Amino acid sequence: MIKVLFVDDHEMVRIGVSAYLSSQPDIDVIAEADDGTQAVDLALDLRPDIILMDLVMKEMDGIQATEKIIEAWPEAKIIIVTSFLDDEKVYPALEAGATSYMLKTSKASEIAKAIRSTYEGQSILEPEVTGKIMNRMRAGQDTALHEQLTEREKEILLLMTKGKSNQEIANELYIALKTVKVHVSNILGKLEVHDRTQAVIYAFQNKLVE
Image (tube, rainbow, N blue to C red; front, side, top):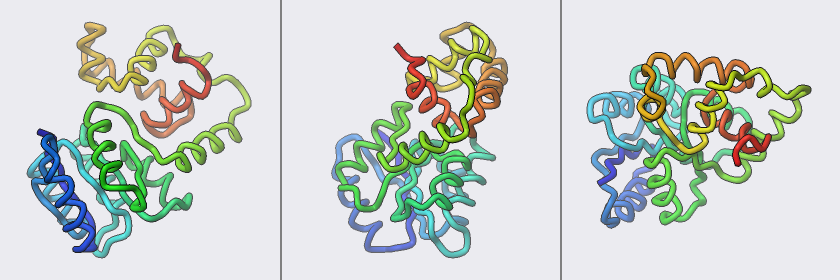
């Protein structure tokens, strides 16, 4: 059962989406929050498998809440569900550590699918979001940044594209979790990206994945 925390300041949205998600045999909405402050407290207390996070809320917005949750709990999987596609929302949300980015115009079934995919380690992005990221990376990319990666870093990047967590990578390569984190940090730095999602997009864009 996938445990979900749903964060949105519109009660009717929470009622409607929660009702649909709770009807799914593999999803359980264990708590709801209507602002970022409450979301942080519930996330760190309950440790849900997935957090559905609205962006524009009173008290504390979704970007700030995402930053605080990821800072305290780096393994958290957060799906942004918002009406906004502007650069001032998309990039800060992903840089804060969100795993996936969905629009409120998505069908409830599509959100449920995104929950399952994100739970399995994938990053689900609206096509418009993927396009924005790829264009931004292409605009600032003069050389093949991945040529700087060591063989071990390339190996770890490949596992990242398969949705493997740091712990799963450590187990598969028989190395320490701390070592994996160092390699991942180096990969992000060399590829000049802010998070794992952008690193994975870079890998696919540059055909580093067979």
